[in-house]
Image (cartoon, rainbow, N blue to C red; front, side):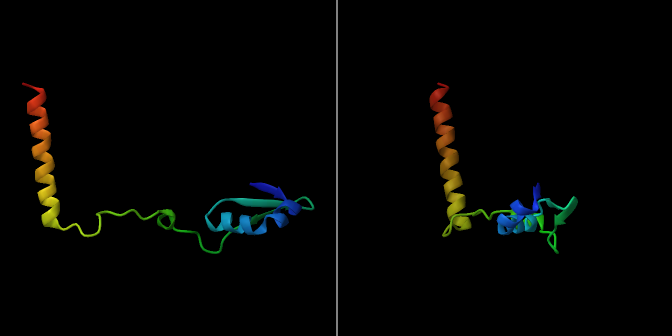
Length: 83
């Protein structure tokens, strides 16, 4: 994003946030183009949002039992529909 120095000054904190996320931030002043770059490039993994893998309280045993129950329900439903 290329801006004038006035717009860059008005939005300095938002532009600093954008640069810290790795976005390209440029502004012009007296015919010269400047680029705002974070000192450290952010990790691509830093942008990931964590997702829960398994619901808290679920154990291997309860998961196995739930899978057996679900499988039995699917088979029973399939058999009922294909009679």
